[in-house]
Length: 174
Image (cartoon, rainbow, N blue to C red; front, side):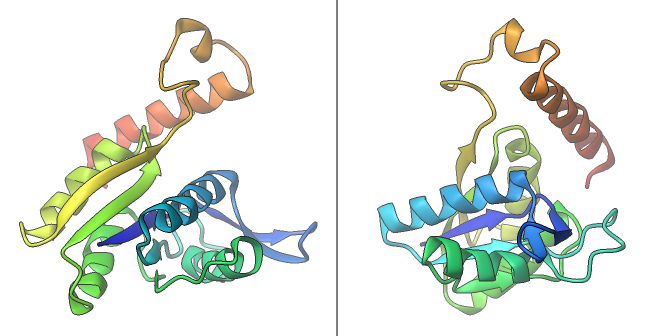
């Protein structure tokens, strides 16, 4: 069994760190993945390249995550897949890498809104030989969503953005 974290974006230059960093979404996922891997005593992987919209990005999300996992969380990544540009490629390239290591079950970490699309992509790529378990990290408070969670606020705007982004992704198959 392995824990696999899906990237959600990076910043090419974060002045506070004088170099590249993961964005907030990727950091939340990585933090949960590190915690989960420690809890279940499983190796950790990260999947994230340079997305279609990140043309200026020089370092893959996986390369940045590898450094942050080690330096900030004290946990090395066993796998760092940095060639993917979208969720389908995350699935295809990551599962190919994990199969080569004999992994038969993964705990997939991504945000709850991204999980349906991720499970669809990973189930298709798994072809029945790798079991996929969902481990969503959430934007909802206490696992429940209320109308006020969607109202104008920083978190509300983020939830609406996520919902629209994932709806488009489901419609286009990315």
